[in-house]
Image 1 (cartoon, one colour):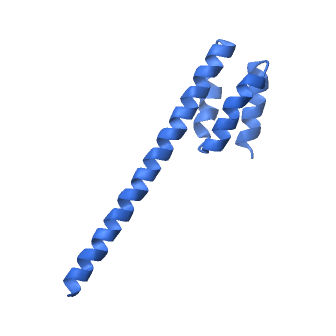
Image 2: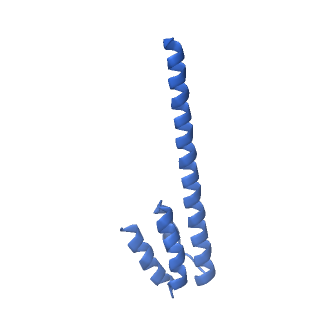
Image 3: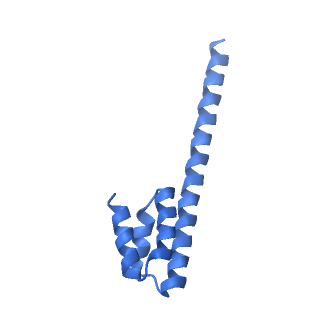
Length: 92
C-alpha cells in the first residue's frame, strides 16, 4: 500500500513539475516575441536600434510592461524619447 501511495505522490510531483516548466517556457516565449516586435517596430520607425536599447529590452520580463512599451513607440517622436520611457520602465 505504501508503494502505491508513493507512486501516486511521485506522479503528482512530476505532473506539477511539467506544468511549471510549460508555464515558464510559455512566458519566456511571450517575452521574447514582445521584445522582438518592439525591436522591429523601433527599427521601422527610427531606422536604427542601438545595442544598448536592445540590451535594455532583454532585461524586461513583464508582458504588460512590454506591451506598454510597444504602444509608447507610437507616441515617441525620437529614439531618445523612447529610450527615456524604456529607462523609466526599467526603474519601476
